[in-house]
Amino acid sequence: MALTFGKLCAIAAFTVGSVAAKSSCVSVRSDGEPAGEFKNVSGIQVYHSYPVASNYTSSSTAILYISDIFGVPLLENKLLADSIASANYPVIMPDLFRGDAVPAEFAEKGLNLTEWLTRHPTSDIDSIIASTLEYMHSELGVERVGAVGYCFGGKYVPRFMAHGKGIDVGFIAHPSRLEVAEIQAIRGPISIAAGELDASFNATARRNAEDILSRKNATYQTSLYSGAPHGFAVRVNASIPREKFAKEASFVQAVTWFDAWLL
Ligand SMILES: *[C@@H]1O[C@H](CO)[C@@H](O)[C@H](O)[C@H]1NC(C)=O
Ligand SMILES: *[C@@H]1O[C@H](CO)[C@@H](O)[C@H](O)[C@H]1NC(C)=O
Ligand SMILES: *[C@@H]1O[C@H](CO)[C@@H](O)[C@H](O)[C@H]1NC(C)=O
Ligand SMILES: *[C@@H]1O[C@H](CO)[C@@H](O)[C@H](O)[C@H]1NC(C)=O
Ligand SMILES: *[C@@H]1O[C@H](CO)[C@@H](O)[C@H](O)[C@H]1NC(C)=O
Ligand SMILES: *[C@@H]1O[C@H](CO)[C@@H](O)[C@H](O)[C@H]1NC(C)=O
Image 1 (cartoon, protein in one colour):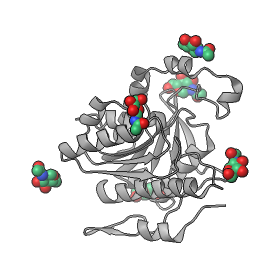
Image 2 (tube, protein in one colour):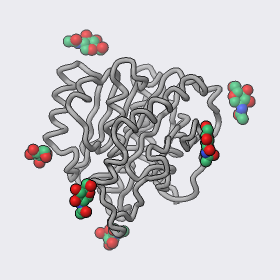
Image 3 (cartoon, helix red, strand yellow):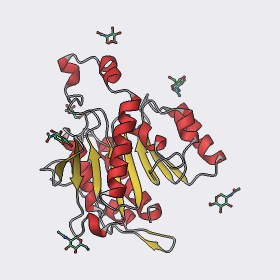
């Protein structure tokens, strides 16, 4: 069942200034089969999801999807990438962990997350993102790159929005391990979705980010979702109304942001 909400579609159809939104009506899919495909890009498995009525050769913009620790195996990540593609943006999601993503049921399996993180240092993730951006620019001909980052990935969108790093417009949700210097270095429009119950990006961190972005006169947006736990933009319990709303609305937040600024 696709989750479609008429009022959210109406929000997505807003006209921002004189710029008509690309996506007249979009919704986020939370179950069903993924529509995209994997390609081996210099040894990295990269998920590609295409807009129905377009392809890369006809798109000068595309979205880089920087995932959470569950990575490309997680169904919700592929369906969220597909949902963004259905809003008319080709989406590229690299396997940041080279086949070693955290299984969704890691707690039951007794996986040690601290130890897992040491296997995937920032330098490794940086290098995969840099080569994926290079692929998008040179092989796919993308001129302007938007990026979404969830949890773990929420740190890397700001990192690559620093001057000359390759991401032009960003959206992040419930980022983890995001540092002040990374926020300070952001160039370009950034939208942030925060969850009231998220300890990784709590009220103090969010207010700090707002102060920094405001002082920089950045083009930014922050939205706070009540009752939303860490991970809400990707994985929610859809039978809890506030969680379901937070996932839907943060998806629309991302798409309207790109419609407005990724021109
Ligand atoms: C992916 O491509 C690399 C070379 O770019 C090759 O060495 C590797 O075997 C390929 N992996 C798969 C799974 O096809
Ligand atoms: C992709 O776009 C190009 C350029 O617009 C077009 O010529 C080609 O037919 C398209 N291919 C598909 C499969 O849609
Ligand atoms: C997890 O791994 C870290 C680093 O290797 C280690 O210090 C810690 O004791 C481990 N925790 C558990 C519960 O095994
Ligand atoms: C947010 O987290 C930081 C670091 O863990 C902590 O110092 C701060 O008190 C927390 N703020 C709130 C409002 O919980
Ligand atoms: C803030 O940025 C906007 C948009 O770039 C610009 O029009 C405005 O002059 C800037 N304000 C200040 C105080 O720099
Ligand atoms: C989802 O939330 C409902 C209502 O609170 C609860 O009964 C159910 O166990 C939850 N499902 C999962 C998978 O946590």
